[in-house]
Image (cartoon, rainbow, N blue to C red; front, side):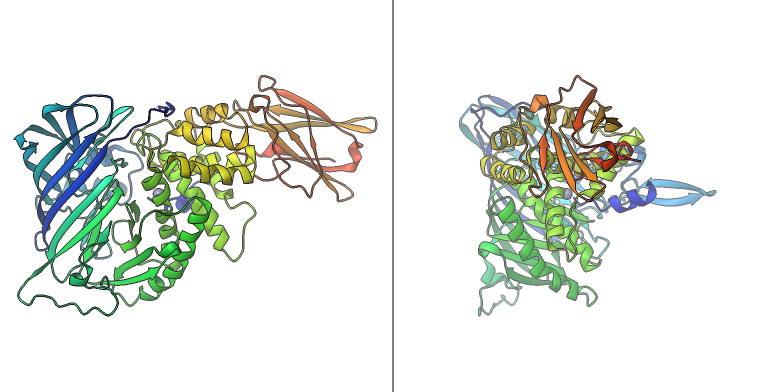
Length: 624
Ligand SMILES: [Zn+2]
């Protein structure tokens, strides 16, 4: 999802960390689904066959499925949460004024029986034998007929019947821009079981985790509808609509009212699609011959924007390939749909009526998720910062790269937003489950912003080159392996040689803050003594820049003792002196500049602005 809320924030208000051991394993799935959509009443019926491979060392007696559609019913946990959270998502509530007072009402609460969502399961069988199931809100619990032993497979079959809800969040029918069907989280999806156990999270707000595997999906729908989504279309030459091979003339059977779209998607952990009668469909070749599909409404007001978006997204994908690692699939689809921007396997659903700048920003963010949400796929409910934060980081990087006027520090706003949250007193540690934040704003800044700063600040700690190397190595070593927080930290340690345990601990498991200050600059004969103070709990190495009256500049670096590391000079054009290390327990530190006090104009802590000091006033000392 995209951080579209951030601008309003600025305007309105100036775990588990168990390391993955060498005995890493993951479950595997093979889905076969056939579904028929009735476009008149938005109901669909389907069958699912799921071959489940238990690669864990445990014998499983139960399994769990997500039935996400059930969240869109009056009284659901998602509904109740929208009614109770202080800063409800604007998309989920309607605001009315009663006696001059603003009243927010949950949109889910108002859904009529033919407008709400549901996903009902019947005829559940394990290897041909009926198994007992129980629906608990958005989760289906299955008591297995026979336990699944380690290193064995079993086959589940079921029938499902669903109703597409009026679009409230992410999925749904008839969204704000008139897209008929945004089909995400629409099918019974088996929950992830990993080294920590089951992750059968109820669908309250966020977010998604899943088992990688192969999907084979046949969607039968009114023949006038154009589809886009996850996977590779197998019968493109019978479907047409821009999917067919060059020069192929599609002969639609005369009397049929429907078409069956057959998609295959290897090694994905989700399957999403969207459909509309008015979709235009363009295909552009991206880097490494990847097909980039663009599906958007035939609305004269937006066509030019969607055409202009296409070459830009080729560049963005190229940047991500070079700076993270190659995109491993053969296609990616940018689809108008949903309620903002949301990432799925091989595709995104984004609102498409805005400015080119707006849709470019959203598309850039969502495409970035392919690497972090989909291919690395950390558990987003538990560590949302590893997905939203890292995605925000690469989005900010590429946006700056492509901007006409480049910023020296493209992450500046993130530091302001983070300090703003800290100073509001509402920060919760990043180990908080993404549904358990008191307010949406705290979740968002913690995940998107503090998560992004985890990386930009890592550049301050180990140097930009080592950070870039860390990101690439992290992707290579952990793609398709659900990395946990320790994995990014350990990768940075291996690349840099620095010890960073303290960084992961303080930044992600506590609300400790960074606050260093210059307390005094005193004359000492021909020399000057500079006194510094650590006011915040969190340790940091300190970069200092000294500007002299004669216009020259010099820098000083105070390594942090517990890092056992000396960062290379980030700006070799400026002479740097490496001082003695700062042991964290000392709140004070002094050093000598071998020049008289009256030759100094200004001393600055961290001229890069990449260290997240929450009180900047004492970071600059002007000598008078
Ligand atoms: Zn996002």
